[in-house]
Image (cartoon, rainbow over all chains, first blue to last red; front, side, top):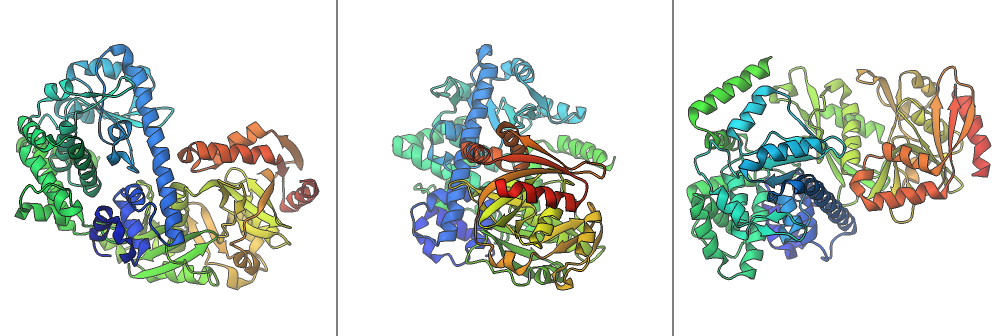
Length: 335
Length: 286
């Protein structure tokens, strides 16, 4: 298995599971891409070899336990922050699970990601520290780096439950060129039953696309694009006007090109029912990068990966700031 | 991967890939007679160079696979067998969700299983290996797999890993069952012992557990037996389990049933003969 195309095909068309010859490789690959839980749900109920079924059943149960744990962590944050009276918006996997979205099914959920209005940050920080969360990084440069230039606080970890929380006040670094309208995102949040919130459906897509294409080196990209496919299908089914709303919203945040790319690639790889035009030359490069993993779970295509890694830093900050940041990091590494 | 080895141990199968011939050749010798995986492997282990040039220049083996520890130190190529063993342990510890995984040794007699658990150095491996040569069926020295549905223990009879002073146990053992002497490892000198043919042939047979023992080894200790209450046993076993938290409610239920259904004792011993005598005393009543 030389790349991840078979995994992608099976996620989109689970009925083709009969074509799989090498389950061991497929499973190693799906684990490496954090898609084993999603794959297990997609293949549920099919007639598979018994040992494969046993493995997938364990993955489904594992995903269920992870979901319970993630929701509990959200509840812990809710209790710590409720007295502040500011809106707390769940992001990413925890949001999908809390909202009962298909994208949350079997999804691995690592850290708890929340978004709060920037003016509330000092209070949130104090409340979390008082409730048992602690700083992960003690280094003062890292601390300053996060506070001045990033879109989130330095990561915090809970000293008893050992779970991390990322507190965001924006969806992109402050140094990145697009400047999403965070006030509008917070204003249009969608309530959950317990007093927490998620982003509105179009903003959820905008955030997922921004996270995938405008803020990273595409590590874990197949999983993030799978999220986008699931979200798009579910939102479009609920609301026929969704596609138009999505374009308008993406445009308002200065992220239309990013969202368009996400939709084109999701359509190409996962057959998302939305044809937003032909793949561009750059899109094809993204595809190459997204499927660059073999049946041993090894990262392939080092040069393509390196290119995207450099690009991710380029997108995050202007060149002079980037040069300074890399200089400080390099000097620290030598010490 | 250039060199590949498939291995089935009890209900779990592994695919091990290596960039070098050595570790796979050592695995083939140590695990001669073990069955091959049937169809799909539960876990993939990769032994590969930490950096590209490290494949040839002062080769060092990074332990990778489906599940990895970010800060695991690589081992020199001469310890490639140990790297493979650690790689398999890592997959079990981080990825095994079909069973409640207990860091414990287990042996069986007349269809009934004895679980031995305790801190590193308590003598689990040594006692299990010894009992396995004296009429008990060796089920495993590293992990015991507790079935989440029916509460039985599944064997996981990997090669026994004996360290430092326990190596004396190997005197007089069939040399064909022994791995190479691995010196200067992070845990001192290590040598592996292949379980006897009965343990390998019956690796598919689960057994009903009837007794939990918490052995404690110490040179000056007087032989002693102490009752361990179900609550204490429960707490100690949560610490001995790598996946208790990850299994959530199912892990809690399985472990609560386990400690509620069978007696637990702590034993102190200063040499293996004392331990054997204590176990012989306790066993008929269990």
